[in-house]
Length: 192
Ligand code: HEM
Figure 1: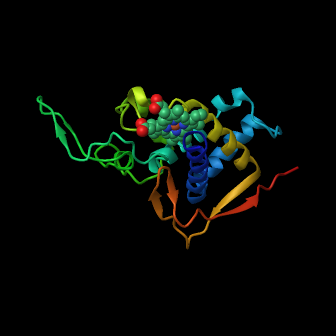
Figure 2: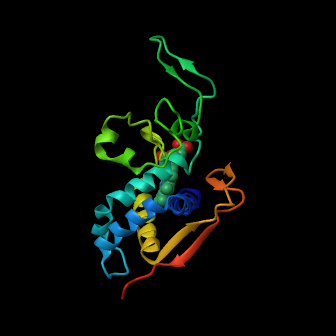
Figure 3: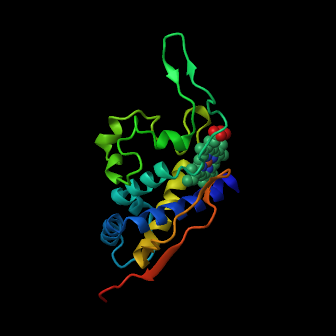
């Protein structure tokens, strides 16, 4: 339940929350989705590779809200090796918001995930699915699941922020909001 369900359910919640807080990015995603889906109301496998902007937004959401905020092999204190290199103490959440790795770490900027920007960064700067031999075996499945649900949600609904409300993040096994996620939803106006 944790690996296959709770993670993706929380992931979908956070991407919709992020797009709620950033209506300008929500609109770009919706336009991209509308171009790919047209009047279809289902997603096909090949559609999922034609939504690069929406995919980048999902990745920013996974950076700012890593669904598995800590893995069991974290370093609790800095470890310095014989050659002077150091592994700092910390968790995935701290790494994803570390200002030495990410300029303006709290800013929601999908363009950080353009291929040219990804290639100039360490592959270990962004590890929502962990890294190394024990990384997530479900990561492609999970990304496709989140993409499909996001696409269908954005096609039909507009998500609006409640400015008075902010989530209180709690790192349970999966990252959650103690006070829920409040989003106002209204049907997208279509011309036909
Ligand atoms: C957005 C959704 C998901 C996230 C963020 C996520 C994240 C992770 C992370 C961080 C780990 C490593 C945990 C550790 O090292 O202690 C992991 C392991 C694992 N995940 Fe996922 N996961 C997701 C979805 C899924 C799905 C959908 C499946 C299965 C269909 C899955 C199956 C697994 C399995 C079996 C492992 C253990 C792999 C091993 O120990 O060799 N995950 N996941």
